[in-house]
Image 1: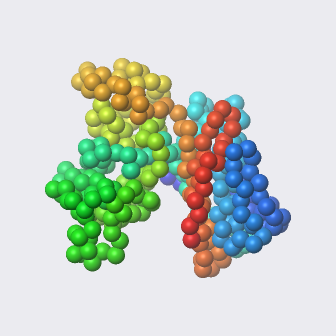
Image 2: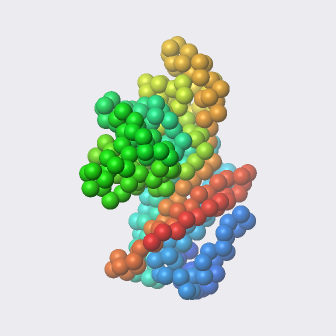
Image 3: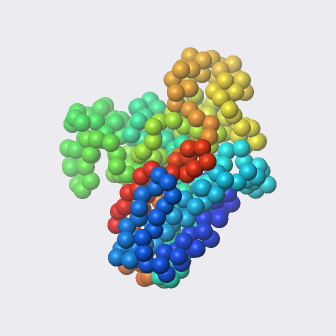
Length: 316
């Protein structure tokens, strides 16, 4: 995920302010376009929820606007993929309420699907992200133990008894991760490691990775792509190269890397995409004085020229 200075999505800051003003003044039901859900009755909803919903509405407006523009440019570059370079973060004051809104936008297809990767893929991701081999194996096996339904340890893993013995108040779910923040409690994940890997991870998704957007560490988890190949792809993208197929990628890699791709070609094709089709938006609203917060997380998907909000989750 890119930083807050990414200009491609900077318009969200202004757009959400317009939405917030309209919502507060209308004090009524907010309706989204086709495929979206009806928001809660904002006249009765807590102030923090109102602000968070305004952030989602602004993101929806911005994403739809990108699909409708034919001459979309970012930093002087014309975008072939209208949803590329949307990742970013805004922190704004909430008009009409005195609260704050923090909106984080992430290209889902550029993130590692934590609940779908296997141990080897996760180990490759971690080492490419900078973890040493021993730590990467410990984390990868501990994540597998956290996800599986039994209490049997892997060699470097950890189950509930291990966490209890160390006084942890958060125990393995013995099921899929519900939130990226759960990684903070996994054996081997230090604060420094978490800070590096968390922005590259999602707990939702179908396993596909956009080779035109994902960082090298995420691409290194794909079948047939070594860490060196992933870094080479990232370097080529940095020089302006855009890829349109796995074959296009293979042609621009050294022979050994091409052979690795060819050996796992069907699996790699099934796990890759070349456009941003899904976007995660986290909108965190906070009341004046920071007394109450509300987080709304939504998934937006594109179909043709329309941006759909396919699901939303709320949390205090």
